[in-house]
Length: 284
Length: 311
Image 1: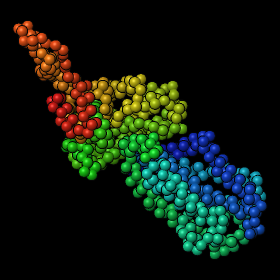
Image 2 (image 1 turned 180 degrees about the horizontal axis):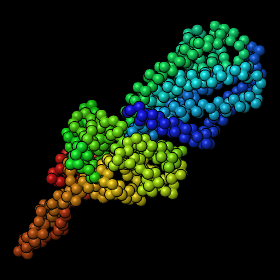
Image 3 (image 1 turned 180 degrees about the vertical axis):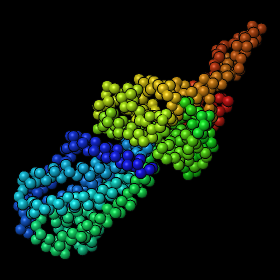
Image 4 (image 1 turned 135 degrees about the horizontal axis):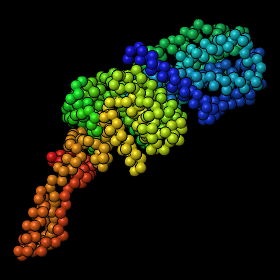
């Protein structure tokens, strides 16, 4: 493909992603999903609003940034993983394979819609939180930090979701290969309680993955500078955050196209037909 | 590419999965503007063949040329000249046909030529496949028949020179099947699109195809127009009768003469002829026998037998 035709396919992909996003926020199914996850987060903050945090901060202010980090990680990994696995099975991807430039457009659309979907997810949590609790954002300049942390987290973690979605044998297996590891990772990444409460080696493992850094970055955005004392090394470790998230992003940019290409080459009508048969046959 | 060169040329095509040989020396051509049907029982290798020609599957051996290129290596501009009709299932539920066709058609725009304007004009396309009334409805609300029409529209939106349809009417009700046949006829007439379709339904092959290639056990066992195939198979008739409690069977190309002679023998006092029956084997019988044998596991024997009958 020449540069011009790639550009053309990318533009059509952006149009696809935007259309999918508009259709998603207009669908009651997706609206319920956003509200449901938001209700879980806000409900948790509300129920534990008087809990002792060991700092001067109220519980909601203390816990919200980490939860946002976890929520973003969850959304940008599981979202694309499910989308890819599903659209491999239902033939969406195969349709694009049969079209000139289709796969480029498809992947572009997939990236855009999953990026945009973070916005309603964040809004659904932030709006009620700011109405219910005080002192969530220490400094207004923190919003700038929120922006780059979210963006870098997307770049670091969305490729992971796409790789999972490309490699799982079927939609039914996303739970096993996507959900389960993410849940386990959330448990050790300082999302629900400070990471220092865990064994040393678990802390090391957690810090290899991007979720911990997404949470840390969010805390650095929302919390006052003094709260950094409670982190590992007594600092927000901003450079380390950029380095780890950026490193995952680079790996993602290198690995994902290879995995996607291999996966799309395997797409055939008979594979889609087999997947269709398989969904009708749950017990094997 | 000269006008005389076939659109599709397949020579000694072989496909093996491990030790399992699913295509064994398949050869056929498709000429420009022809509607060719690959007919065969399930598991005969039809889908594998069409997927190799679509460029979706890599063959083990043999030569394949589609629109002058090897589909395994062909690029995006080759892709733009082909169309694949896929069976939609539950994809794009939130889209409307107009939105989806406009988007998918957009990919073909850079591949317009002086002779072929790509993509198809949206309104014209929607009319052609009969989606006018529902072009702005969500696809998730569509019936099976409506989805199929959308499938066809998605397959031809780029004005393909060669269109692939794999088992296009599998799971159709009779009404949807009929509508679908009409669309295929319209396409074939319209601008001489070359069409390759697969089916396991003989009646469908007879209705749609200029030429039928019968595939069984990974080999081609017949290749001709449906009419010619029918004539060849029905070359011999079977005469059965009983006489003196004994049953007789005789195959003959001239059943009239044979029966006349038989009754003349009776008149001459050779014993009464009872249960006289003359049956001309037809294509349907021969094909059904092929399918039955194929499904009972005797694929190779079935193929040989059918090739014998249709020779």
